[in-house]
Figure 1: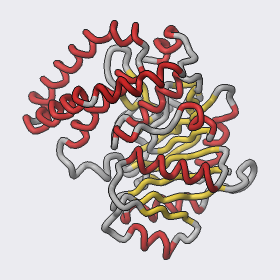
Figure 2: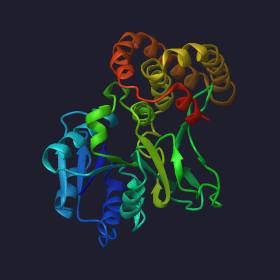
Figure 3: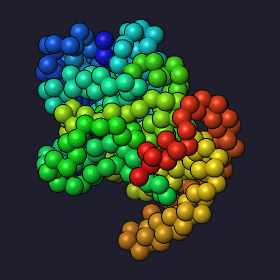
Length: 319
């Protein structure tokens, strides 16, 4: 049993492509059943009406407010675990289209031992020979990044392998990981919540397997591009929490000088390449991250208790 959870906020114009690509999935060998759950964050378009009238097989959960990505998917995961008893939970953005063999290839990714999550190859929806994401990583001295983003796909990431983590725009998880690692951090609202969760999975001994045969086409940024500076603000805020919560103390202390230098360089580039507006959004986000640091440190206590891997292993999965 597979549960597919799709968070949605005013995504009416994306949903048909997404739903139709799931309807034509190869339900043959090795896939017994799958369910689709739409978590609607109080959309004021026709998302819910369209879904109920045209895709009655979809379970619809209507939130009373826009809770952000993390809380929305958490509600879908909890609903699924309580009512559907899935073996695998897949998170899927509303602005995606799945290859016809996507589900079966994602399931194959769990054949490897210790696999807690599976990442796929995400390609640009419009230019399908351009990479969107082939797994999420964290630089050894810097920030998270999407591997291969905007590169032309020439097969350079066609090797199945263990990687740092999966982009939650199209990712799969064993159901048991949520009982051990917990759920997505709802204080993140949007951005880096998947990187944070991937790091917590790694800390508790669950690896991420990348299967390049599982393919999704993604309209990256389609739901947030209209909000100037929003992504920058959220990323800067969440980056502080990600580090404070998860990094073992020796790794955190040794990297502080590099973190500071990276921020100085990044903020200079915001002014030089972007605008003062984006720069101020970054400063605003960083300030919020500092203000919320006591909350992050409280979460840190519980996370650090669950670590089951060595610092050497953690260092090896950073790039």
